[in-house]
Image (cartoon, rainbow, N blue to C red; front, side):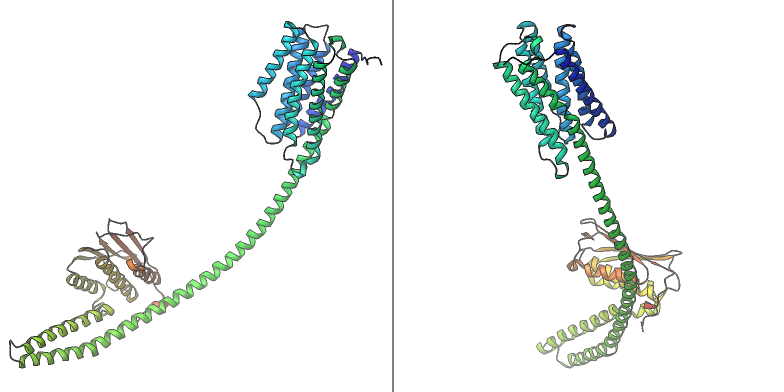
Length: 483
Protein backbone atom coordinates (compact mmCIF):
# COMPACT_ATOMS: atom_id res chain seq x y z
CA UNK A 1 0.00 0.00 0.00
CA UNK A 2 1.44 3.32 -1.03
CA UNK A 3 2.39 5.88 1.56
CA UNK A 4 -0.16 8.60 2.25
CA UNK A 5 1.06 11.98 1.01
CA UNK A 6 -0.33 15.38 1.86
CA UNK A 7 0.50 18.61 0.12
CA UNK A 8 2.47 20.70 2.70
CA UNK A 9 0.89 23.95 1.56
CA UNK A 10 -2.63 22.53 1.96
CA UNK A 11 -1.76 21.12 5.41
CA UNK A 12 -0.31 24.42 6.53
CA UNK A 13 -3.36 26.38 5.33
CA UNK A 14 -5.66 23.89 7.12
CA UNK A 15 -3.74 24.15 10.38
CA UNK A 16 -3.64 27.93 10.16
CA UNK A 17 -7.41 28.04 9.64
CA UNK A 18 -8.00 25.71 12.59
CA UNK A 19 -5.78 27.76 14.88
CA UNK A 20 -7.23 31.03 13.62
CA UNK A 21 -10.68 29.87 14.70
CA UNK A 22 -9.27 28.60 17.97
CA UNK A 23 -7.53 31.89 18.71
CA UNK A 24 -10.63 33.94 17.94
CA UNK A 25 -12.78 31.82 20.25
CA UNK A 26 -10.20 31.80 23.03
CA UNK A 27 -9.73 35.56 22.96
CA UNK A 28 -13.52 36.07 22.90
CA UNK A 29 -13.98 33.87 25.95
CA UNK A 30 -11.07 35.55 27.73
CA UNK A 31 -12.50 39.00 27.07
CA UNK A 32 -15.90 38.11 28.58
CA UNK A 33 -14.51 36.09 31.51
CA UNK A 34 -11.09 37.63 32.01
CA UNK A 35 -11.61 38.05 35.75
CA UNK A 36 -11.03 34.32 36.21
CA UNK A 37 -7.36 33.51 36.99
CA UNK A 38 -5.54 31.71 34.18
CA UNK A 39 -8.08 32.50 31.48
CA UNK A 40 -5.89 35.18 29.90
CA UNK A 41 -2.85 32.90 29.65
CA UNK A 42 -4.97 30.05 28.31
CA UNK A 43 -6.46 32.32 25.66
CA UNK A 44 -3.12 33.85 24.64
CA UNK A 45 -1.75 30.37 24.00
CA UNK A 46 -3.99 30.25 20.90
CA UNK A 47 -2.39 33.19 19.05
CA UNK A 48 1.00 31.84 20.15
CA UNK A 49 0.29 28.50 18.53
CA UNK A 50 -1.04 30.28 15.44
CA UNK A 51 2.20 32.25 15.16
CA UNK A 52 4.21 29.05 15.50
CA UNK A 53 2.21 27.42 12.71
CA UNK A 54 2.69 30.43 10.44
CA UNK A 55 6.45 30.31 11.00
CA UNK A 56 6.50 26.57 10.28
CA UNK A 57 4.62 27.26 7.06
CA UNK A 58 7.51 29.46 5.88
CA UNK A 59 9.82 26.43 5.83
CA UNK A 60 11.90 26.52 2.61
CA UNK A 61 11.43 30.25 2.01
CA UNK A 62 12.94 31.63 5.24
CA UNK A 63 16.08 30.82 7.26
CA UNK A 64 16.12 27.87 9.68
CA UNK A 65 16.57 30.02 12.76
CA UNK A 66 13.15 31.55 12.04
CA UNK A 67 11.21 28.56 10.68
CA UNK A 68 12.70 25.95 13.06
CA UNK A 69 14.13 27.48 16.22
CA UNK A 70 11.73 30.40 16.60
CA UNK A 71 8.69 28.39 15.47
CA UNK A 72 9.36 25.52 17.89
CA UNK A 73 10.27 27.96 20.66
CA UNK A 74 6.96 29.79 20.26
CA UNK A 75 5.16 26.43 20.15
CA UNK A 76 6.80 25.43 23.47
CA UNK A 77 6.00 28.78 25.13
CA UNK A 78 2.37 28.50 24.00
CA UNK A 79 2.20 25.04 25.60
CA UNK A 80 3.67 26.48 28.82
CA UNK A 81 0.89 29.09 28.72
CA UNK A 82 -1.62 26.23 28.51
CA UNK A 83 -0.06 24.65 31.59
CA UNK A 84 0.16 27.86 33.61
CA UNK A 85 -3.36 28.86 32.61
CA UNK A 86 -4.76 25.47 33.59
CA UNK A 87 -3.03 25.55 36.98
CA UNK A 88 -4.17 29.10 37.69
CA UNK A 89 -7.71 28.23 36.59
CA UNK A 90 -7.68 25.39 39.14
CA UNK A 91 -6.18 27.68 41.83
CA UNK A 92 -2.85 25.82 41.82
CA UNK A 93 0.57 27.47 42.13
CA UNK A 94 2.49 27.87 38.81
CA UNK A 95 5.34 25.59 37.77
CA UNK A 96 7.98 28.06 36.69
CA UNK A 97 11.67 27.22 36.66
CA UNK A 98 11.58 23.48 36.06
CA UNK A 99 9.21 23.94 33.12
CA UNK A 100 11.23 26.74 31.54
CA UNK A 101 14.41 24.71 32.04
CA UNK A 102 12.77 21.90 30.08
CA UNK A 103 11.78 24.37 27.34
CA UNK A 104 15.36 25.62 27.03
CA UNK A 105 16.67 22.04 26.94
CA UNK A 106 14.21 21.16 24.16
CA UNK A 107 15.12 24.23 22.06
CA UNK A 108 18.77 23.32 22.59
CA UNK A 109 18.11 19.79 21.30
CA UNK A 110 16.27 21.20 18.26
CA UNK A 111 19.27 23.49 17.56
CA UNK A 112 21.65 20.51 17.80
CA UNK A 113 19.53 18.45 15.42
CA UNK A 114 19.32 21.43 13.05
CA UNK A 115 22.92 22.65 12.89
CA UNK A 116 25.25 20.15 14.58
CA UNK A 117 23.72 16.76 13.73
CA UNK A 118 21.05 17.55 11.15
CA UNK A 119 18.11 15.16 11.72
CA UNK A 120 14.44 15.78 11.04
CA UNK A 121 13.55 12.74 13.18
CA UNK A 122 15.60 14.05 16.09
CA UNK A 123 13.92 17.46 16.00
CA UNK A 124 10.43 16.02 15.75
CA UNK A 125 11.04 13.40 18.47
CA UNK A 126 12.47 16.04 20.87
CA UNK A 127 9.56 18.40 20.31
CA UNK A 128 6.89 15.68 20.60
CA UNK A 129 8.41 14.33 23.82
CA UNK A 130 8.53 17.78 25.41
CA UNK A 131 5.00 18.63 24.27
CA UNK A 132 3.79 15.27 25.59
CA UNK A 133 5.17 16.14 29.03
CA UNK A 134 3.61 19.64 29.01
CA UNK A 135 0.25 18.33 27.79
CA UNK A 136 0.28 15.57 30.40
CA UNK A 137 1.00 18.03 33.22
CA UNK A 138 -1.80 20.26 31.92
CA UNK A 139 -4.21 17.30 31.87
CA UNK A 140 -3.29 16.36 35.43
CA UNK A 141 -3.85 19.94 36.62
CA UNK A 142 -7.27 20.05 34.97
CA UNK A 143 -8.48 16.60 36.04
CA UNK A 144 -7.32 16.45 39.68
CA UNK A 145 -10.04 16.77 42.34
CA UNK A 146 -12.73 18.15 40.03
CA UNK A 147 -15.61 19.81 41.95
CA UNK A 148 -18.98 18.11 41.33
CA UNK A 149 -20.42 21.28 39.77
CA UNK A 150 -17.62 21.62 37.15
CA UNK A 151 -17.19 18.11 35.81
CA UNK A 152 -18.16 18.37 32.13
CA UNK A 153 -15.90 21.17 30.88
CA UNK A 154 -12.83 20.15 32.91
CA UNK A 155 -13.15 16.50 31.93
CA UNK A 156 -13.50 17.38 28.26
CA UNK A 157 -10.54 19.74 28.04
CA UNK A 158 -8.46 17.63 30.43
CA UNK A 159 -9.22 14.55 28.36
CA UNK A 160 -8.23 16.35 25.16
CA UNK A 161 -4.88 17.31 26.70
CA UNK A 162 -4.38 13.73 27.86
CA UNK A 163 -5.19 12.48 24.34
CA UNK A 164 -2.79 15.05 22.89
CA UNK A 165 -0.06 13.85 25.27
CA UNK A 166 -0.62 10.24 24.16
CA UNK A 167 -0.52 11.28 20.49
CA UNK A 168 2.74 13.16 20.99
CA UNK A 169 4.26 10.17 22.80
CA UNK A 170 3.27 7.93 19.87
CA UNK A 171 4.65 10.49 17.40
CA UNK A 172 7.96 10.72 19.29
CA UNK A 173 8.24 6.94 19.30
CA UNK A 174 7.53 6.84 15.56
CA UNK A 175 10.29 9.34 14.80
CA UNK A 176 12.74 7.43 17.01
CA UNK A 177 11.90 3.94 15.71
CA UNK A 178 10.57 4.74 12.22
CA UNK A 179 12.29 5.61 8.93
CA UNK A 180 14.35 8.73 8.49
CA UNK A 181 12.41 11.64 7.02
CA UNK A 182 13.29 14.99 5.57
CA UNK A 183 11.43 18.30 5.83
CA UNK A 184 9.41 17.71 2.68
CA UNK A 185 8.12 14.35 4.00
CA UNK A 186 7.13 15.42 7.53
CA UNK A 187 3.53 16.18 6.51
CA UNK A 188 3.05 13.03 4.47
CA UNK A 189 2.32 9.43 5.38
CA UNK A 190 2.14 8.42 9.03
CA UNK A 191 3.94 11.58 10.11
CA UNK A 192 1.29 13.67 8.36
CA UNK A 193 -1.45 11.59 9.99
CA UNK A 194 0.06 12.37 13.41
CA UNK A 195 0.15 16.07 12.56
CA UNK A 196 -3.47 16.13 11.45
CA UNK A 197 -4.54 14.09 14.51
CA UNK A 198 -2.83 16.58 16.79
CA UNK A 199 -4.45 19.48 14.94
CA UNK A 200 -7.86 17.83 15.24
CA UNK A 201 -7.38 17.21 18.96
CA UNK A 202 -6.27 20.75 19.61
CA UNK A 203 -9.20 22.11 17.64
CA UNK A 204 -11.36 20.79 20.51
CA UNK A 205 -9.63 23.18 22.90
CA UNK A 206 -12.12 26.05 22.31
CA UNK A 207 -15.10 23.83 23.12
CA UNK A 208 -13.55 22.39 26.27
CA UNK A 209 -12.21 25.79 27.27
CA UNK A 210 -15.59 27.48 26.92
CA UNK A 211 -17.39 24.64 28.74
CA UNK A 212 -14.92 24.82 31.63
CA UNK A 213 -15.43 28.57 31.94
CA UNK A 214 -19.20 28.15 31.64
CA UNK A 215 -19.22 25.47 34.35
CA UNK A 216 -17.20 27.71 36.64
CA UNK A 217 -19.47 30.65 35.95
CA UNK A 218 -22.57 28.57 36.74
CA UNK A 219 -20.87 27.22 39.85
CA UNK A 220 -20.05 30.75 40.97
CA UNK A 221 -23.62 31.84 40.31
CA UNK A 222 -24.90 28.91 42.34
CA UNK A 223 -22.51 29.71 45.15
CA UNK A 224 -23.51 33.37 45.01
CA UNK A 225 -27.18 32.41 45.11
CA UNK A 226 -26.56 30.17 48.09
CA UNK A 227 -24.62 32.92 49.83
CA UNK A 228 -27.44 35.39 49.16
CA UNK A 229 -29.98 32.90 50.53
CA UNK A 230 -27.79 32.25 53.54
CA UNK A 231 -27.26 35.97 54.08
CA UNK A 232 -31.01 36.55 53.83
CA UNK A 233 -31.63 33.80 56.37
CA UNK A 234 -28.95 35.20 58.66
CA UNK A 235 -30.41 38.70 58.25
CA UNK A 236 -33.84 37.37 59.17
CA UNK A 237 -32.38 35.62 62.21
CA UNK A 238 -30.48 38.80 63.09
CA UNK A 239 -33.66 40.86 62.88
CA UNK A 240 -35.49 38.33 65.04
CA UNK A 241 -32.57 38.27 67.49
CA UNK A 242 -32.56 42.09 67.67
CA UNK A 243 -36.29 42.09 68.36
CA UNK A 244 -35.84 39.44 71.03
CA UNK A 245 -32.91 41.41 72.46
CA UNK A 246 -35.00 44.58 72.62
CA UNK A 247 -37.75 42.65 74.42
CA UNK A 248 -35.13 41.15 76.71
CA UNK A 249 -33.64 44.58 77.40
CA UNK A 250 -37.08 45.95 78.26
CA UNK A 251 -37.67 43.02 80.57
CA UNK A 252 -34.20 43.51 82.00
CA UNK A 253 -34.90 47.19 82.68
CA UNK A 254 -38.16 46.30 84.40
CA UNK A 255 -36.47 43.52 86.34
CA UNK A 256 -33.58 45.80 87.30
CA UNK A 257 -36.00 48.39 88.59
CA UNK A 258 -37.88 45.74 90.55
CA UNK A 259 -34.63 44.35 91.93
CA UNK A 260 -33.44 47.83 92.80
CA UNK A 261 -36.67 48.53 94.64
CA UNK A 262 -36.44 45.17 96.41
CA UNK A 263 -32.82 45.77 97.31
CA UNK A 264 -33.76 49.18 98.68
CA UNK A 265 -36.47 47.62 100.81
CA UNK A 266 -34.00 45.01 102.05
CA UNK A 267 -31.49 47.73 102.96
CA UNK A 268 -34.22 49.67 104.71
CA UNK A 269 -35.27 46.55 106.58
CA UNK A 270 -31.65 45.86 107.47
CA UNK A 271 -31.26 49.34 108.94
CA UNK A 272 -34.47 48.91 110.91
CA UNK A 273 -33.28 45.56 112.21
CA UNK A 274 -29.89 47.03 113.09
CA UNK A 275 -31.65 49.79 115.04
CA UNK A 276 -33.90 47.29 116.86
CA UNK A 277 -31.00 45.03 117.84
CA UNK A 278 -28.94 48.04 118.92
CA UNK A 279 -31.83 49.27 121.13
CA UNK A 280 -32.17 45.85 122.69
CA UNK A 281 -28.46 45.74 123.35
CA UNK A 282 -28.53 49.25 124.86
CA UNK A 283 -31.80 48.95 126.80
CA UNK A 284 -31.73 45.33 127.87
CA UNK A 285 -28.49 43.40 127.54
CA UNK A 286 -26.21 46.33 128.33
CA UNK A 287 -28.32 47.24 131.43
CA UNK A 288 -28.22 43.67 132.70
CA UNK A 289 -24.49 43.41 132.22
CA UNK A 290 -24.05 46.80 133.96
CA UNK A 291 -26.08 45.55 136.94
CA UNK A 292 -23.95 42.40 136.99
CA UNK A 293 -20.79 44.51 137.02
CA UNK A 294 -22.10 46.47 140.01
CA UNK A 295 -22.95 43.29 141.90
CA UNK A 296 -19.53 41.82 141.21
CA UNK A 297 -18.00 45.06 142.45
CA UNK A 298 -19.94 44.77 145.73
CA UNK A 299 -18.86 41.14 146.15
CA UNK A 300 -15.25 42.10 145.46
CA UNK A 301 -15.39 44.82 148.15
CA UNK A 302 -16.88 42.43 150.68
CA UNK A 303 -14.19 39.74 150.33
CA UNK A 304 -10.89 40.00 152.17
CA UNK A 305 -8.18 41.38 149.93
CA UNK A 306 -5.40 39.08 148.94
CA UNK A 307 -7.46 35.89 149.21
CA UNK A 308 -7.96 33.57 146.28
CA UNK A 309 -11.71 34.22 146.30
CA UNK A 310 -11.10 37.98 146.10
CA UNK A 311 -8.68 37.58 143.17
CA UNK A 312 -11.09 35.26 141.32
CA UNK A 313 -14.05 37.66 141.72
CA UNK A 314 -11.85 40.57 140.64
CA UNK A 315 -10.89 38.65 137.48
CA UNK A 316 -14.57 37.92 136.70
CA UNK A 317 -15.37 41.58 137.38
CA UNK A 318 -12.77 42.74 134.85
CA UNK A 319 -14.01 40.28 132.17
CA UNK A 320 -17.62 41.32 132.71
CA UNK A 321 -16.65 44.99 132.51
CA UNK A 322 -14.88 44.29 129.17
CA UNK A 323 -18.01 42.46 127.99
CA UNK A 324 -20.14 45.51 128.79
CA UNK A 325 -17.76 47.67 126.76
CA UNK A 326 -17.87 45.22 123.82
CA UNK A 327 -21.67 45.24 123.88
CA UNK A 328 -21.61 49.01 123.57
CA UNK A 329 -19.15 48.77 120.68
CA UNK A 330 -21.29 46.20 118.86
CA UNK A 331 -24.41 48.27 119.42
CA UNK A 332 -22.61 51.34 118.13
CA UNK A 333 -21.43 49.41 115.07
CA UNK A 334 -24.94 48.15 114.34
CA UNK A 335 -26.56 51.54 114.71
CA UNK A 336 -24.77 54.78 115.44
CA UNK A 337 -26.80 57.13 117.55
CA UNK A 338 -24.27 59.82 116.72
CA UNK A 339 -25.09 59.45 113.03
CA UNK A 340 -28.75 60.12 113.73
CA UNK A 341 -28.24 62.87 116.27
CA UNK A 342 -25.00 64.61 115.28
CA UNK A 343 -24.61 63.83 111.55
CA UNK A 344 -22.21 62.02 109.29
CA UNK A 345 -18.95 63.96 109.97
CA UNK A 346 -19.13 63.46 113.75
CA UNK A 347 -20.19 59.81 113.45
CA UNK A 348 -17.42 59.10 110.93
CA UNK A 349 -14.80 60.80 113.10
CA UNK A 350 -15.96 58.81 116.15
CA UNK A 351 -15.81 55.57 114.17
CA UNK A 352 -12.26 56.32 113.04
CA UNK A 353 -11.15 57.07 116.63
CA UNK A 354 -12.77 53.93 117.97
CA UNK A 355 -11.23 51.62 115.34
CA UNK A 356 -7.84 53.29 115.67
CA UNK A 357 -7.82 52.65 119.43
CA UNK A 358 -9.01 49.06 119.08
CA UNK A 359 -6.56 48.07 116.32
CA UNK A 360 -3.68 50.26 117.53
CA UNK A 361 -3.58 52.04 114.18
CA UNK A 362 -3.40 55.66 113.01
CA UNK A 363 -6.48 56.79 111.09
CA UNK A 364 -6.20 60.32 109.73
CA UNK A 365 -9.75 61.64 109.24
CA UNK A 366 -10.59 64.97 107.57
CA UNK A 367 -13.69 66.65 106.16
CA UNK A 368 -14.07 69.43 103.63
CA UNK A 369 -17.05 71.44 102.33
CA UNK A 370 -19.73 68.98 103.47
CA UNK A 371 -23.35 70.23 103.16
CA UNK A 372 -24.99 71.16 106.45
CA UNK A 373 -28.08 69.08 105.82
CA UNK A 374 -27.23 65.74 104.26
CA UNK A 375 -29.90 63.29 103.20
CA UNK A 376 -30.29 60.42 105.74
CA UNK A 377 -30.03 57.96 102.82
CA UNK A 378 -26.65 59.35 101.76
CA UNK A 379 -25.40 59.60 105.35
CA UNK A 380 -26.27 55.98 106.17
CA UNK A 381 -24.84 54.75 102.85
CA UNK A 382 -21.49 56.53 103.23
CA UNK A 383 -21.22 55.56 106.90
CA UNK A 384 -21.69 51.86 106.05
CA UNK A 385 -19.21 52.11 103.17
CA UNK A 386 -16.69 53.72 105.54
CA UNK A 387 -17.25 50.93 108.08
CA UNK A 388 -16.63 48.23 105.48
CA UNK A 389 -13.63 49.94 103.89
CA UNK A 390 -11.91 50.48 107.27
CA UNK A 391 -12.67 46.92 108.31
CA UNK A 392 -11.07 45.58 105.13
CA UNK A 393 -8.04 47.82 105.52
CA UNK A 394 -7.41 46.93 109.17
CA UNK A 395 -8.23 43.22 108.96
CA UNK A 396 -7.08 42.15 105.48
CA UNK A 397 -4.53 44.74 104.31
CA UNK A 398 -2.38 44.57 107.44
CA UNK A 399 -1.92 48.35 107.64
CA UNK A 400 -1.36 50.62 110.62
CA UNK A 401 -2.03 53.92 108.87
CA UNK A 402 -5.19 54.86 106.95
CA UNK A 403 -6.31 58.18 105.48
CA UNK A 404 -10.02 59.02 105.30
CA UNK A 405 -11.25 62.09 103.41
CA UNK A 406 -14.92 63.09 103.40
CA UNK A 407 -15.52 66.07 101.14
CA UNK A 408 -18.36 67.75 99.31
CA UNK A 409 -18.69 69.53 96.00
CA UNK A 410 -21.56 71.44 94.42
CA UNK A 411 -22.99 68.25 92.96
CA UNK A 412 -21.80 65.29 95.05
CA UNK A 413 -20.29 63.94 98.26
CA UNK A 414 -17.00 62.05 97.99
CA UNK A 415 -15.49 59.52 100.38
CA UNK A 416 -11.86 58.37 99.93
CA UNK A 417 -10.28 55.65 102.07
CA UNK A 418 -6.57 55.23 101.34
CA UNK A 419 -4.18 52.67 102.82
CA UNK A 420 -0.68 51.46 101.96
CA UNK A 421 -1.26 47.81 102.71
CA UNK A 422 -0.67 44.63 100.75
CA UNK A 423 -3.23 45.52 98.05
CA UNK A 424 -5.25 43.08 95.96
CA UNK A 425 -6.61 42.43 92.46
CA UNK A 426 -10.22 43.75 92.40
CA UNK A 427 -11.12 41.37 89.55
CA UNK A 428 -10.10 38.20 91.36
CA UNK A 429 -10.93 38.99 94.99
CA UNK A 430 -13.06 36.34 96.67
CA UNK A 431 -15.33 36.24 99.73
CA UNK A 432 -12.41 35.31 102.00
CA UNK A 433 -10.66 38.56 101.05
CA UNK A 434 -13.61 40.87 101.61
CA UNK A 435 -15.37 40.17 98.31
CA UNK A 436 -18.80 40.16 99.93
CA UNK A 437 -18.00 43.49 101.53
CA UNK A 438 -17.10 44.99 98.14
CA UNK A 439 -20.39 43.74 96.71
CA UNK A 440 -22.28 45.19 99.67
CA UNK A 441 -20.65 48.59 99.16
CA UNK A 442 -21.54 48.59 95.47
CA UNK A 443 -25.15 47.63 96.15
CA UNK A 444 -25.56 50.34 98.77
CA UNK A 445 -24.18 53.01 96.43
CA UNK A 446 -26.35 51.80 93.53
CA UNK A 447 -29.42 52.49 95.65
CA UNK A 448 -28.48 56.17 95.97
CA UNK A 449 -27.29 56.40 92.36
CA UNK A 450 -23.70 56.55 93.54
CA UNK A 451 -20.58 54.85 92.29
CA UNK A 452 -17.50 53.28 93.79
CA UNK A 453 -14.04 52.53 92.41
CA UNK A 454 -11.32 50.31 93.82
CA UNK A 455 -7.79 51.27 92.88
CA UNK A 456 -5.44 48.52 93.99
CA UNK A 457 -2.65 46.23 92.92
CA UNK A 458 -0.79 43.63 94.95
CA UNK A 459 1.92 45.36 96.94
CA UNK A 460 0.78 48.95 96.27
CA UNK A 461 -2.04 49.46 98.76
CA UNK A 462 -5.71 50.23 98.14
CA UNK A 463 -7.77 53.35 97.48
CA UNK A 464 -11.56 53.21 97.77
CA UNK A 465 -13.31 56.15 96.11
CA UNK A 466 -17.07 56.52 96.61
CA UNK A 467 -19.25 59.27 95.13
CA UNK A 468 -22.93 60.05 95.73
CA UNK A 469 -24.77 62.80 93.81
CA UNK A 470 -26.52 65.35 96.01
CA UNK A 471 -29.62 65.37 93.80
CA UNK A 472 -30.45 61.78 94.72
CA UNK A 473 -34.04 60.96 95.60
CA UNK A 474 -35.60 57.50 95.64
CA UNK A 475 -38.68 56.15 97.37
CA UNK A 476 -37.11 52.73 97.97
CA UNK A 477 -34.67 54.17 100.52
CA UNK A 478 -36.34 57.38 101.56
CA UNK A 479 -36.15 58.00 105.28
CA UNK A 480 -35.30 54.53 106.58
CA UNK A 481 -35.89 54.09 110.29
CA UNK A 482 -32.85 55.19 112.22
CA UNK A 483 -34.39 55.73 115.64
